[in-house]
Image (cartoon, rainbow, N blue to C red; front, side, top):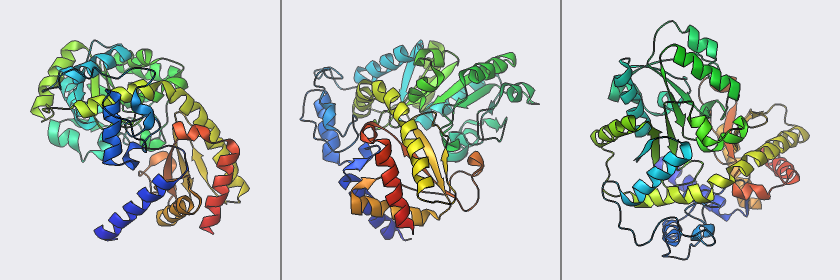
Length: 409
């Protein structure tokens, strides 16, 4: 497919998703620049909050601040190399996670690289133990070694977090254990709370520090039956993202002991992350903390309803083989596997949106190599259930699955 063809497909997808009257999640990336700017202005009392993007994020009419006040003082000066709304966000996240300090980064990739580099210097060991499906291994072009001189080792190849035994029995020392919660490319999977505690304890026995890749940590509480502070307290440091579960524009925070965070601020500058002004991203993060964070438990609960109904729908439609993974979901996101080419599934998904106004699935692909035992010839999609998805009943899901399968025949 040429670049022009891909651009046309992108326009087609956006038109179909924006035109759908029923979706499982609306995203700010589906909106326009004008809608996003209007919602940001509304959050600080300067606009009408024209809708069109996410249910409660920067592109939505619900971002007007009505009933809960503005997310930040509209008369505050803009940030300059930090301060202002950026410092406000850092304090807010440190309080939510129960850490001494927090530093805002333009990307989670940078935040995590800096954290692991700082821990390597403090432990005297540049080896990081992490999962082969973890974000730095799959999506960062070998950054840990190329940029920071770190070395990675894998404790397991199974599509799950390593066990305490695997941590304890690894044959060589490592300075940091990085745990991605949830493990996205394995299907947004989480361990049990007891398993997580045991893994952390095993790392401590080896004198290793523990860092949480918590890009999606916000929605892990219901599965563990624990609050954010109790989860974060297991680790020595944690990174959280704002543009995923909270639908912010961009940005992340690294949280932990004050001495680590202050060192991380130095490395942030060295990495080119000390941006002149970041108030749009920081404001959108505050909006997400105010509007989306309290709703995440309801999304997680309803994702279980949606996933179960999807499985019932595929079975009723006579699909010879499929998988909803994990079932039930551990968070408000999960995978669906089907034995068709991704192009065929993409076209059926688009046609359903265009012809019926219902977006059930978005993009399909081959999935990460080795992810959850994905067989050859099988395509995978990620399903997110957010505010708009709460309107779907189980029967709505089953009916939509039946229509989708009909478009494959």
